[in-house]
Length: 160
Image (cartoon, rainbow, N blue to C red):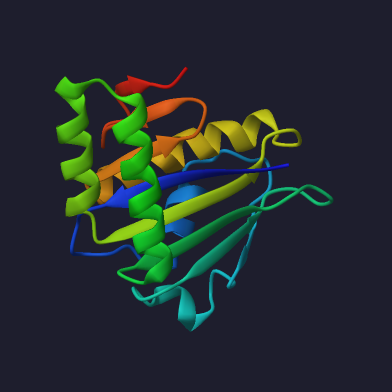
């Protein structure tokens, strides 16, 4: 079953898919180097303007999918949905701060995973990837059923 983590980034300088791929490979999370779509050596991986990256970390397992939206209809819908959730579930003291962080963002990266089939190595990579993306993009992480995290993955608000 798909689960989506969202990272709302404020940084104006983006990360290319190659940056993310190099970071994952350098993290030594897996016994074998994951397969990436687009491929690591594909020139498209170096573009800062990208929409998706697929990570195949083991054969016959669900992939980890990254989707990036910059100031488009999907980005706006994600912003609106998260702001509405913050308005309903976050205390007044923190509400304004989180809403301002979402409103200041200029992109959202969605990470789609299948929690049921994710290996321990993939979980470790995912946690580190969230920290990497949030730190580099001055981001706010929203993990449904879990909470909101700052750019250093510090818990800002627990859900539930």
